[in-house]
Amino acid sequence: MARTPAPGTRRRILEASAKLFGEQGVRAVGMQQVIDATGVGKSLLYREFASKDELIAAWLRESDAQWWERAEEVTAPHSGDPARQILALMEFFHASVREPDFHGCIYYNTSSEFREPGHPGRQEAKLHLKGLCNWFRDKGVEARAEDPDALADMLMLIVGGTLANGEVLGETGPARMALAATELVLRQYAPNALTTATR
Image (cartoon, rainbow, N blue to C red; front, side):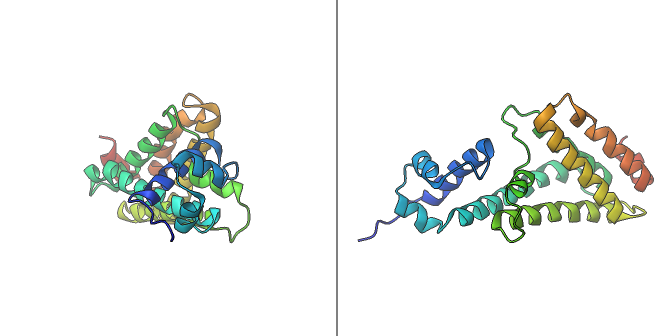
C-alpha cells in the first residue's frame, strides 16, 4: 500500500530545495540532498515532483509569487506615483544585496545554469524577468515616459547589474550606484514624474 504524504510534505520539499538551490546553485544539488534535507522518502519526493526539472520549475514559480507579493508591499505605499514606485523597487533590490545570505538573483543564476531554451528552469526564469520588464514598462506609461520600452530596458540593465555586481563585489561595489543610476534614467525618460518622486 502506497504511503500517503504527510500534510505539508510538498511545502517542506520546496522550502528545503529553495535553501539548497539558493546556496549551492541548482545543478550542484542532487535529489538525494533534497531527500536528506527533508527526511522524506524517495518515493514521496517523486510522487510530489516527478523529476528534478519539475521541482526546479515549481520552486521558481513559487518564488515568483512570493517575490511579487513582496514587491507589492514595498511599492503599494506609493500608489499613484509611478516614479516613486520604481525607486522603491530599486531600493528593495539594493537592500537584497546587503543581506548576509545573498547569493545573487535566482532567476539570472538559474538561467545561466541551463542554456537550453526549452529547459523548465530557464523558461520560468525568463517569465519572471519578462514580467518585471513589463512592470517597469507599465510604470513608465503611467509616468508619461517619452519611451516606456526604452525606460524598462534601461531599468532592467540596472537591475541585472546591481544583482550581478552585488553578488561578486558586494554592496560597496558598483551596486551602490543603483539608485543614482535609476534617478538618472528616470530624469532622462520621465523628468516630470521624477520631480514629484524625489521630493
